[in-house]
Image (cartoon, rainbow, N blue to C red; front, side, top):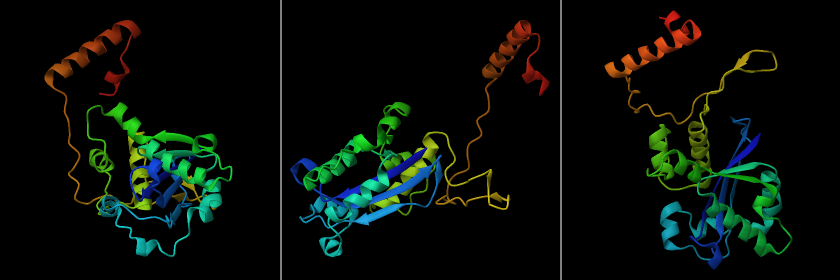
Length: 235
């Protein structure tokens, strides 16, 4: 399974009013493993950047002055994402901007949903943690993902953090790969990245007396029905 964890930075909040993409960052996962085949591109938006947006990402018009316009990168970007499942935090925002960029070219480019699957990690988080704060920073805190490098928003860094977060949310390992093999048959292990040394130790939660009693009662029932409770053989 090929997944592209993607983030964008823009000149403002609303593509409908003419705001544009200024940065795309994407991280490729294949079978939930990082491949290193990432995509990163700054884009000259041919318009001003809102002050509020500038304060979020810090990308200035001067920095973007010599960067390509979207029409120059559109074909390569489409080829990169085509056929993959895009994993995006608040997907309607980023997908809406990408669709508008393709539409404004007036060259018959498809909509994202026509060539990619889309998984919205914000919608996933709402189901998993109703009522909780669901910003990228808040979820990183919940899952122990180190985002200490994230002083300003940046598309590639945010995509890397989101990739770690998505794998943690969906029960998979992030940066530690076990069981892979090199060509000579030796095991391969990838180093963990962005694991904070300042994290508190994981708490040890012990069963209460009532919970232990309920557990024993359940084992008694299993023993009557099945003849034995395997759990007791482990004690």
